[in-house]
Every structure is written in structure tokens, then in C-alpha cells.
Amino acid sequence: MKKALAVSSILILLSIGSFFLVRTYMLPLKYEKIITKYAKEYNVHPLFVASIVKVESDFNEAQKGGLMNLSDKTAARIAKEMGMKYFDRSLITHPETNLKLGIWYLGKVYSTKNHVFTMKHWTSRNGKNIQGGDLDHYMRAVEKHKSYYKLLHGKKLITAQQ
Image (cartoon, rainbow, N blue to C red; front, side):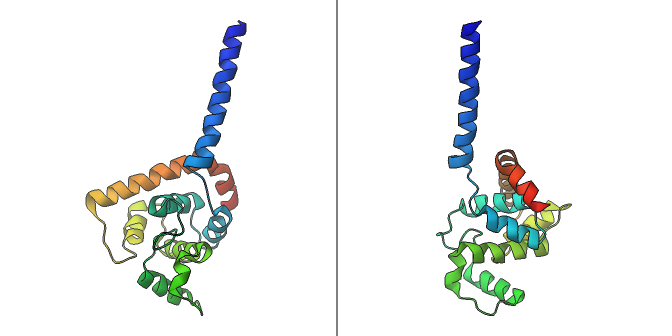
């Protein structure tokens, strides 16, 4: 009986440790406050935004195109449409600016009922039309990460949306 209790306790501790390891190192949620701020402002679910950022950049703001992988031309066009008075291409990799631009654009095309519509428009933002199998692969990756983020960080993001 004592042996079974000890094994059960060890398994529980390992499970909890694994959860925190995955949550902290494998699927961290960086820029949570910025994501929730603009997701709420532009009416896009924050879990959807987090999963797109994960697929687009793996939360690496230093990559060309920043967190949401916006081309120079796309970022400048979005900034103009938003009425931003000052925009410089160097701001593309600035996390808050990049997320604001990307989430604003997502808000324009976001549909809770038609993810294919949303994803077609999102993936074509930089002038490239992703279709067929590539679009299906992209959509599956976003949905997979959305499920992971819901499991690991969902309470924070769902609460922030309300």
C-alpha cells in the first residue's frame, strides 16, 4: 500500500513538473498583455492570435517581419490604413507595434464562423496566396497550437477576452 502511494505521488509530481516544463519552455506565452490588449480592442480571440504568432515566428521578435511576420510593404500599408501618423520600417520588429498592426489586420478579416476565410486573407497579407495543401497545413498548425495554448494558458487568455 505504501509503495503504491509512493509511486502515485511520484507520478503526480512528474505530471505537474512536465506541465510546467512544457508551459514555461516549450510553449511559453510571451507578450500576453500586449496580445490581450489588442485582441480585445480589435475583436480577435487572443488564443487565435497567440497561435498565429507561434506559427509565424515562434515568438521571436527579432526575425525579419517581427512576431507576426509582416513584410515592410504590408506593415506600411496597414499603418497607413490605421491612420498611424508616424511609422518607420524599423518598428516592424518592435513587439508592441508589430502585434498592434498584425492584430488590427486580423480584426478586419477575422471570422469566428469561417476560419478558411480568415486564414486565406491572413496568409495573403504579404502578397502571397497560400492555397490547397499549404493552406490546410498552415490551418492545422494554427489550430493545433490554439489547442495547446488553450490547455496551457487558456484561463488567462479566455478571461482577458471577456
